[in-house]
Length: 199
Image 1 (spheres, rainbow, N blue to C red):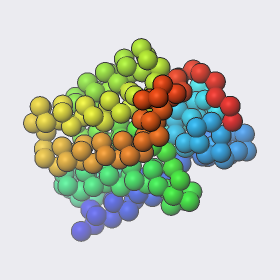
Image 2 (tube, rainbow, N blue to C red):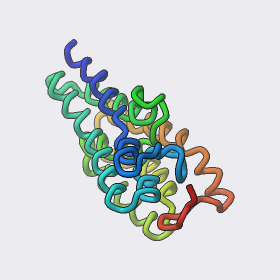
Image 3 (tube, helix red, strand yellow):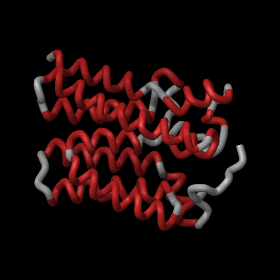
């Protein structure tokens, strides 16, 4: 049962919003009141610059890796606990208890979780997403594509059922969190990477 303690640890770890902390430490602002209003790496990049944006991206990804590793260590490698720890860390990032349950959209943390559990599918989906972002400059489109492709590649590569189910859950998480971006993409009003956005 001690393995299930990792679920709480994962949620609390996910609730540490590096984007929010970067805004407070570097500019004394609540980053959720600037740019897109999202506490994530892309908005950090827009509001604070490349250095903080990259740092937040890496730290958010590492949260996902750490949560899975902690779940594995405390459960003796139980795949169900590892998967649930992954769900919890992303839920913490999206709805952080420390910051009024207003967090990010969880893509970097999703990448960290899925890279820990299914590296090759995550790598392939990630490369495709990066290419799409590079060509279109729509980060949201690449993020949505990433979460849509993960279940497909995981299924094709016959990964454990628990991981496949997790990928479906994360697909739902991402698309729900990106619903406003989806509307903007359809209307052609989504912000492109590198485009300036007023605070």
